[in-house]
Image 1 (cartoon, helix red, strand yellow):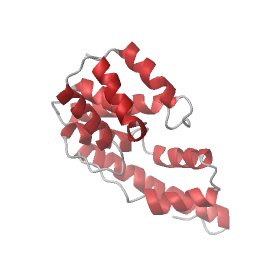
Image 2 (image 1 turned 180 degrees about the vertical axis):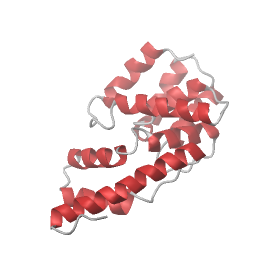
Image 3 (image 1 turned 135 degrees about the vertical axis):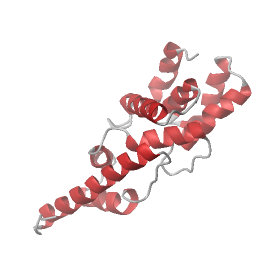
Image 4 (image 1 turned 120 degrees about the horizontal axis):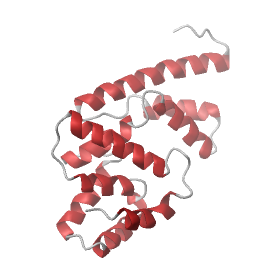
Length: 184
């Protein structure tokens, strides 16, 4: 069972300086989406792995060793730690998930926040990186839309709606910036 006080204490410093789209609220949204997918698709999965994997999602790529040390300190078995670490890695949008836990986290990461969130998250993240609006638009059109896929039917449909909304939004945004017609 997850000791939420210990987990929160451990992960908090890694999310303190993240932009508003990648802080701890991002993790909570992922967990909420994971629960929806688990329920919708009647997935039998250890929810503690989902919780741990979500919380480590935002820094597994920099601090895997520290995460493993933390989990050992929580008296978790080596094979259980491997499952958590793998699920966290598989949650990344540019990774292929091979485990059901990883697929749940991967899809939850992509569908979090609803239809408008792909645009909002990308614009906020681009601003946080110091990009000009045109650079962020190019990034969204060339590196985000059409570049990810979901595993579960519910997530596939939700993500399809997000991408369709993003395509229309980007077209209208470009038109507004450059004086072209905004008809879709």
